[in-house]
Picture 1 (tube, helix red, strand yellow):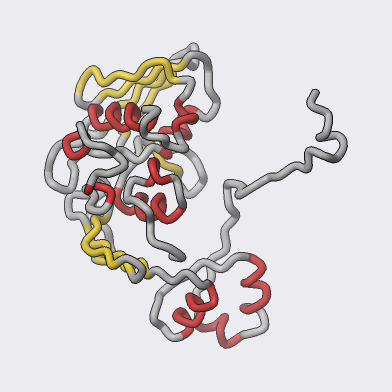
Picture 2: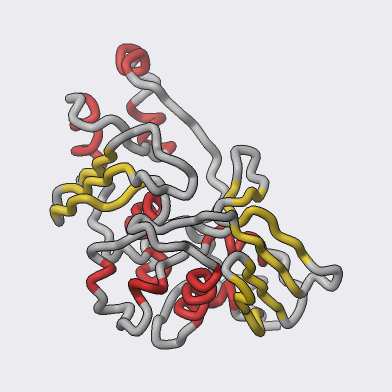
Length: 255
């Protein structure tokens, strides 16, 4: 990865490195499967009311944090409250601005109410990385040591972090999705894509991401390189930036 995460709490930091590492550590209520259909992660099931303004999630039984403490709907409620808190300044707070009320009536039930039907509602709960209330309650989210020494529920836990060099993740035996197939993952910090590529060629790293332009410039003209590497292409399901020149017609008309 090109830089250190600024925090292990991705939904507070908002930058890609934090979110990428957070995806190893934390789970969401929902996720997207290989067909881009919503599937349960922490949630066993969910139901949308007829008026499309209330969603009821039922959590899977026996969920645990890596320290063995129960993961319950109270953690989901706590995370939502944290993200929408103005003092948190989360860039994702707007995803939940139409939520009028959220409640956790029992350990496995989380209910959220909207002011009006909101098309991306379910998707937003697939992005909310649930945090442990018992570790973060009463702490300043911007200064807590949890941001450097997190506790999660997903496949991996942070074992070692050498800033500017690498992050080492080890398998979490209490993962809510079952143990990972790989014992350890090491994310090296290499800011320069050219340096990343040289490390890949020297067998010092196992994978890297090439943007389409770099790929077209380097790979097709090197058949030996193509034979050495396993290459995977995928379409992104998001955009990075769309800009409009407001000095040109028709964008100069504020109507």
